[in-house]
Length: 456
Ligand SMILES: Cc1cc2nc3c(=O)[nH]c(=O)nc-3n(C[C@H](O)[C@H](O)[C@H](O)COP(=O)(O)OP(=O)(O)OC[C@H]3O[C@@H](n4cnc5c(N)ncnc54)[C@H](O)[C@@H]3O)c2cc1C
Image (cartoon, rainbow, N blue to C red; front, side, top):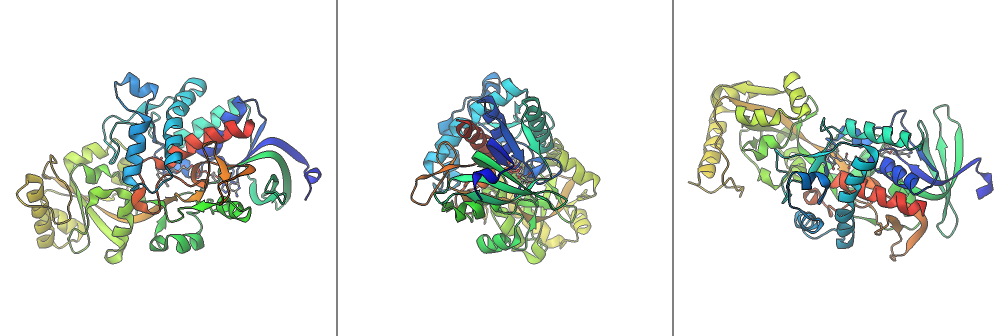
């Protein structure tokens, strides 16, 4: 199809109206470009709306106001440590340097009232650097971004499912075809295209191929994220990297299907299988814990904690919803808790005694967890039945420091950009490399870079 066949053409076209797409649109608009965002859903939500909306950033105005010392270099070191130096160091440098100014800009120019989460230390982060909106919800994040985009006169065409990418033989993208709910097709031309349609978590076949251990896991992200970006990019000769990388979570209440904060574990709780036995070092992280939970009988674990920890967890809306849904069971004694959870009482008591001994330092933890300074559990006790879930994929299109999509030989495609889950992230090749917040980190940081560069 030639460029003249397009009924409509825009300088900057964006596929996907999640955090990455909307941040890119705001940046491109600010740089003076006319922008059109195509979104397959009737209302922009994406995985962004399902998330806690927490964005890690170093050196922000909010950190300064709270007296928190931090730097992009320290943040980058934390990312590399968690992912065992697997991510591209240049990309890690790019996003850790870009995300702080991007959040400051979203606050100052677009009125997003972030603040630093200062009452829970996210595992693996050496500073308090998780930023959230007042409700600490992704729904608020996507709603405020959409409102900002509307105020900036960004055009968002919803119910527009992009199915085809049209490009010249040299890889220059000419435009896309979008299908509308009545089945009609619209061909829209562009000078630059930003792929912000996330990864492939909603595509069972691709998950089975690249993350086989999660093939049968519950997918907790947005179902519309079908891997279109990697499929289109690969067809143009783009490099696709780290497809095994993903964010899992080992604490989704089952069958309620509600995320139970990892504070339930990090503050002193532990996980047992249905035989009442521990099976891992839970403090490694919630992401890798997903596959470990799924490997237990029935793909089920119980998180054992107490009323003190429940009070900390109650700051999160999801936890309160889990309580309201009856997912949290209680017991005045461990025996009563075991009865309520249908766990073998003797085995649970022995496991709890071993954890207490590790906390008191009288015996090493057989799973290698460092319990130093963590209080023993005290009655009344709590337990929640959980399973492991896939939240989103972290592998994707290789990009440079301006979010331009790269070919396998390292050269950039002429006018194609990727941000958020469409781009390869900074979590390496497995679930274990995911540091809390890596998802929205690349959505916000690469989104802004892509929008600016595409407008230029
Ligand atoms: C339960 C949960 C909790 C999470 N919590 C956090 C957190 O607190 N912090 C964090 O950093 N990360 C978190 N994440 C990860 C985070 O949500 C994602 O990394 C982030 O939202 C990705 O943003 P995105 O814009 O790339 O994708 P999305 O927000 O998923 O947006 C992609 C959009 O593209 C649209 N789309 C897809 N294909 C097409 C197509 N062909 N045509 C048109 N439109 C299309 C989709 O409908 C969607 O609206 C969480 C994820 C989950 C599931």
